[in-house]
Length: 416
Image (cartoon, rainbow, N blue to C red):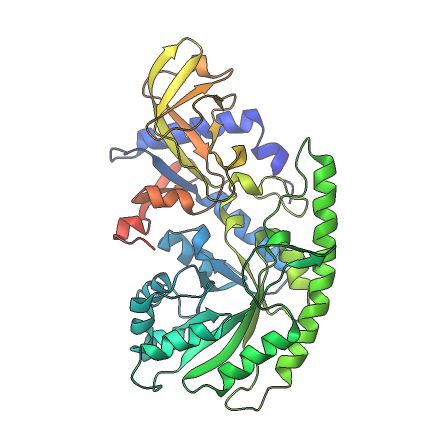
């Protein structure tokens, strides 16, 4: 998929600005800012490319990277997608209750007592939602919140998928479970414990899926990243095979007949994750929206699909245009790559002194002098999903027009 040179050129970005300007002008309702937009043509093209890369392995939708229920439904309706990977149990319960999906895995262990109590009190929810554990303490908390084990809880085990190299651990600091013995021990505990069903395993190789490996002007670093990814994939395949063999030996104990799923990967590692014969499904979310942190991967070039527009409110000088708001900084290590990027029209940049501010963001560059008070400047966020925490609705762009306005989680009055 070679969209990058065309959709990210200055000409294409200026055309996008004109397209969005016309769509806003034609929209019958007044828009509030930030104006959040998702380009459905790009979203659908990205979904198709993710499915192509997965080569038949089902893709579970990462809701954290979307946070707009209508778009979660749209992804699930696309060929190759099945199930949701939620980021909180409360979110998973809401998605199940609203019939957005009936197969939801919570990506992280939960200690949300209210949500866990709701789960064990609802046979319907418990049949649709799988919780994640990596410690017996997670099972103990569930048991402390129920009077009986009449409602069985579906459980998946999160296994550390990091690389062990040169005495160092490389990868996200997630599960304490790494070696085969510790995984098998917890699996036996789950199997032997009344009221729990072991149904799945998760190995998220964030050091492969979430790290750009073809960054301009960083050739040496990118080469090192690619080498670490290669080592990680090789090491992880060996370890997954050993773990699946150990778990297979537990089949027949209690009511454990074997795993229903083995989840792995993310948008940046779909090919290598899907190629592992142990893996039965992969996860993707950011690849649908294409935030700026996903701009520089060798394996794929998604089309930018999510934008937010901010109005020019003043002109402090002939070569500076200041927009209202803008400080939607992405999570993760603080740095320039976490700031939003002025995208359309092209030729704009943040200042080193103010950056992206909470109430105002000065913009400089070749195009700044052409902007007038009231003009909208369109930004891309560094991470997918996060900007929608700042708005109640998203305008869906198709072709040259907005076709629908849909609520975000915030628009439903929800904060997960």
